[in-house]
Image 1 (cartoon, rainbow, N blue to C red):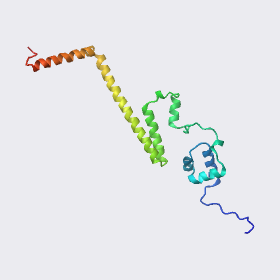
Image 2: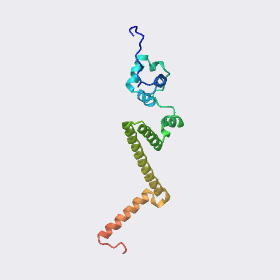
Image 3: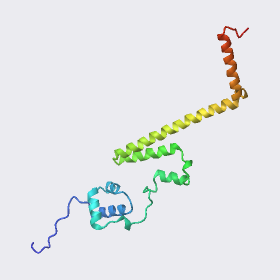
Image 4: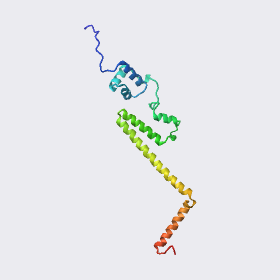
Length: 178
């Protein structure tokens, strides 16, 4: 075959053209390269080599928002639910999102990312527990001060002074019952 018509056989271990078309579509749509490779079972180096060789440029694709999150992501949905007012977001909602993202990272085999989401969830849960403790204490104080007029701050101070005077008299040997 000296005429040059012989073409080398295609790599039998390479993904079919139909798979590469899906890889190209997902990559150009803005998905991160590792995610695209995971979805379609191709190697990251192979994907990057093919993208460079065939000119897959993200600049030629559609505009994507800077956060790069899936529109169905829990965080995106929660932000839409509160109309962008993050002051309306409760800590337990954020903890639930961190838990879901941690689970997703575990399923993808991304241990370091899963641990980061777990740590965040633990911090959020601890902050929520601390806020609940503080609110319970404030509620107790409020009820103590407002449920019995005898326990207003002035009355409490007066009772404390009377108790101190009574204790001092008892220590001096005076019998307060006399």
